[in-house]
Image 1 (cartoon, rainbow, N blue to C red):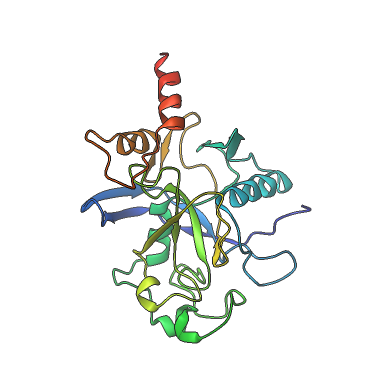
Image 2 (image 1 turned 60 degrees about the vertical axis):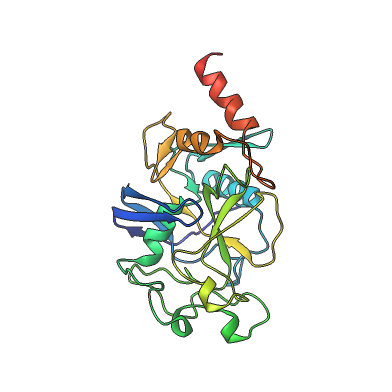
Length: 253
């Protein structure tokens, strides 16, 4: 990779309220300023969003691009586990809080503009992803935050119910308008190959070296949510093995 040529814009810091429909809970997240790519990552030499892309593909792309551009990679991959070094200056997936804050760009409505003007959805009756930046940007200068392709983010979708599934945001070209809103969440396995899925990158350190929390994400919170203090409902698959193993190691047990 001779150079990633990622076009990023600064996103101001601020506070966002994130809601979880399953638990009926909400949490307030204070964000530091960060930088985010203007569009989803595109295929080399073109304007089409890269797809289909697994979560692991996206993480590996971030590390390769970081090395190509002279930055410290954000991730360490080992035996299917991925560790984020929040103090690294390389490319990375945005956290869920960062993504929604950037998507909303100061708005509080379900979308940052009329969907027909800002997003490729089922209403456009297209057969696949469209070239990026063909519809209007939001107030931060970000294109295709809604519609076109779903975007992987760093966070797990629900460690209590869906094991190691990661979160997708934004909606895709075949989704109905109700699914292309700033607050809508979808999750899938990190190795799933999904035709309507791509990714967008952030870059830069957002915490101290060695920290296990940043920008609304916390390893301790992931572990806490994975622990179910009652019989597990049918069909639930709490994420336990890797998180509990890591927790025991850190506790010295």
